[in-house]
Image (cartoon, rainbow, N blue to C red; front, top):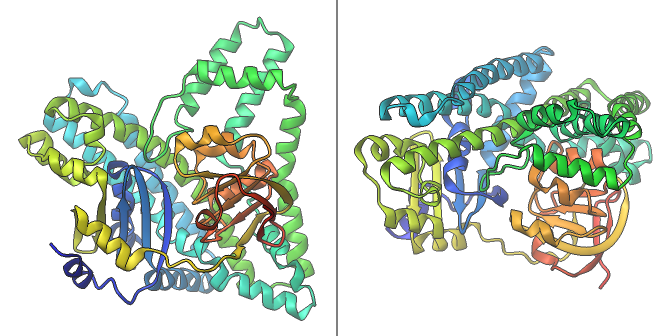
Length: 495
């Protein structure tokens, strides 16, 4: 198969694309491509025409068709403008689908080794289908809205500010208007940890502390999972984090008080600005959508991390039954499970080729996975960036200014290179990066929108953050000295 055949078959040339990149492998990420096509169309009437993702050496680069994203986004906004209740109804639909997924994954806590092949496959199918059903609602429209805010949302705010002679405040005001009005799961886990720290400060020998740590680990064991690495965090892990916080002299009372004030303050600042700028109903609707999508983004990510835990359990069990390692199973996809598990049909050579480099193309007609040298040719011809722009500019996610040394983060093992006061530069942040985000003097991302993980968590941490630069990881190098002016959305090289 030639690159030109694939490019022609899927009409890839002549399109523009929006991209994300992160540490990941094929199996847990595959449903993300599927669910934005037919499951989204089932609930919304429209779905993406195509999603494409490349996987190379355990790194995923994901592409959406811009025209499709714009069509879906415009239709959703149109429905919200027409019916004020549409947004809340959409949220309710998602919550109902989420309940079904939660019920499905709780069934998977049983001992999988005791199930027959047919029952194991049936359980996985129920889990998988409920997962992609709820996820399609949460991401299929949210990302076209969040990632393209600079194309349709920011210009509307800019027009208002130009009339008032305040366009110089655009980044600051836009960040305030899109501030979260709910707490992220990162903040909620920290609050729970602070309550244990309070108990320890009162009496280190309190017999209930061990029980609290066990409950905490059962509730939050998944918080550092991603699309490539899944591990169960136990009481010992969280106990060590609390011990470190104790040594740093962190006051749980003061921290909890600060966290509790954050959301009310965000709401107050936002309401004041809306009134002060006399924002139209149309713009207020966009602000409401951003609030709901920020909440959904964070909850959706939570259940992705939980899902990845269960997908690993299924892969581990199926792999043992058929003689495939967990690394080999990481490059299978769910639709192949029946052939693999029931008929023992798989090609180890193909799985190895997929790990080296593969592309998955999802359309309403199904999916195709392509391996081999042709994949590099497709990526080079259609998707490789011809980066010439040397200016680094993006959207302000969290106001502030900082100077520091650049640390480029692509995979989990890169996190150990981040020291206190560094500038964390990455394609996009993920929950497992929070430990490094807490050390960073500022955060800069290539991708990500107003509801992204970087936008949510940087505001909670009070760390200056610029999102959506598109080129920061390409222009900056480890060790560069830079100044990040997040309030203006600009990164400057100093040395």
